[in-house]
View 1 (cartoon, helix red, strand yellow):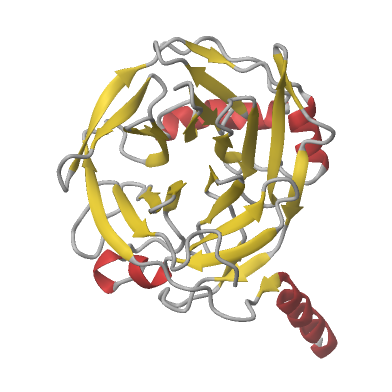
View 2 (cartoon, helix red, strand yellow):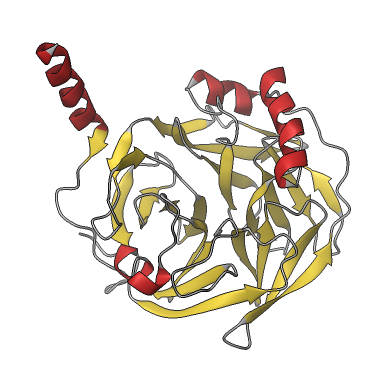
Length: 329
């Protein structure tokens, strides 16, 4: 019995990520409650030109342009006529659970991320169906034709095996011909597809990186414990991938080809101030945009109420780290 306990403890220690030194903390510049989202549950952010856009994972037929002129932001509804879904290659069991979930939580498509290319096209990932919707600047919506190899390779690598743990975020290059996708958890990973004439396919292989295991919540988290490693969103800036790592309360810069982590920054110190805490036992950051001056981080509070009584979705603005996002450790 004692040997088994020691062995289990050793395996847990090996699975937990322990940082050699704490990630530097980002500085919070402002926070903005968001009014006007029908379904709440802000789950993605994107900058298109001068406009900031968001989606809700409870709304299938609309996205939102954010009016950011005041401290409290207003979400302006933009209707989307979504066509019939393509077959992404997900197995029957996952599809059935998705079908049933819409009657409990609302929202069949489960939009979990939005991104934009330089032409103003918006790309929205449906977690429930492992599909990507493109909305043109004129508002016309169409599903990308994605090779079934994407889901096939992801599942062969241990990703996309569990309900509500599929694609949680995406980002696109400025030219609009390469997309990176984040598999959320159990296993988490990063994948890439490239437009090849009319079909988006793997360029060599789809899977850049995948990993399993747990990591410790930051010490500022009440009763911090080891939780599943996850990704909540992606952003592409200056040729680098930036991952929003929700349970670790950090943003990490990664190589866009290998997905190898290069440096991380924490936002735990500001996010976990007593007045900003929620009773939920996991991170709530779901949306990320990185730019030269800083980062936008959006929270999906799952209708939960913050310690100070705020119950609307929140977007934070953090300053870029000292030396910029390209700074070496």
